[in-house]
Amino acid sequence: MYVLAMSGFCRFTISDAEVTRIGQISLAGEIEDQEPVLPRGTLRTCDQFVLSLVIAGEGTYEGPHGRVEPIVPGTLTIVPPQEPHWYGTRKGERWSELFAIFSGPLFDMLQHSDVLSHAGPRPLAPAANRRALGTILGTQPRSQAAAEHQLLALAEWLTSAFRSDFDDDPLCSRAAHRLTVDFTQRVDLQGLAGELGLGYDAFRRRFVAEFGLSPLAYRNTRRLETAATQLRLTSQTTREIAGRLGFTDEFHFSRRFRSQFGVSPSAYRKAPPAAS
Image 1 (cartoon, rainbow, N blue to C red):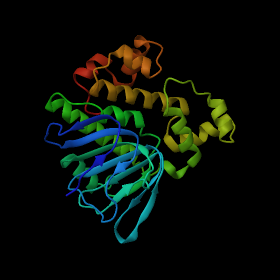
Image 2: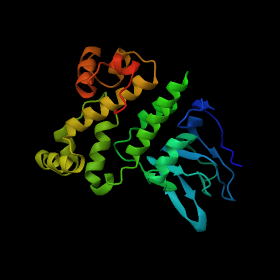
Image 3: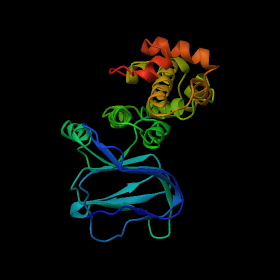
């Protein structure tokens, strides 16, 4: 038996989303500046996958055989089914986190392919935007098709979150985070290179070698991928999405989106391409 409890403010929750052919999200939400309530002592197990992305605050993860690991902001913890574990803050301390409990054949496949096989905390890859996860988990599907789109978006996000090669170059990891943390703010690439102790040309070559894209192309690609997630999973208008992601206007957004995905935002929303 596994019980997830929390005290205080929860920004959103979904529970018992529709069961689909590929899985189900049983519970998801976001807690803000609260003490997680999971009794410490005996390690617990869950018959589903557990996800926790800590946004602020610190804590620890405990596993079998005396394993203890720190949890800091930006740490993504995944616990596979039946894995004994405990995680949380020290008594009286607080954190903010996104969380989800989910199951199904889609995620079993990711476990067997090693994406979700590792139990415990790991740093979040820069390609996995926290706001995108909030969008995915904060949506209450109104149909089975919408629920399946939500699950596919979660699987896609998890795959990007656990890129095995992202930390080969810590400087590029830091740069990628800065490029995607807030799409409404302009990024001075020359200044960013200087912060990393590099000239711009050297920074650009190093970034391309790590990610296969220039810094600007990487930022634009991630911004459009975030827009695609919001089109699939929210009812926001194209104007709202354009404004929240830093596009000049909805027409600029539509042109860039069509260039990336081959269809207009409205056509994508009606029938999202499988390859996206």
